[in-house]
Image 1 (tube, helix red, strand yellow):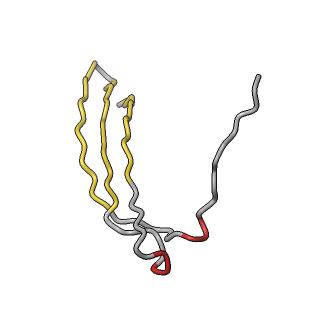
Image 2 (tube, rainbow, N blue to C red):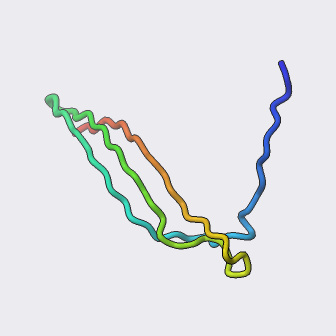
Length: 74
């Protein structure tokens, strides 16, 4: 099997360690006697530039899409 080549770079020390963003999502739940099954879809758009000021004019904002599946037992 060929060796996997990655271009990973650790930027933890050169970026902010917090983010503020907008989250929107929808969910659906099915109740069956004592349990509920649910699915949620969420989208997060960061609003803060996480790059330090000395990297201007570069800008980097976070973004994520999430799908959740769950089971609730009452």
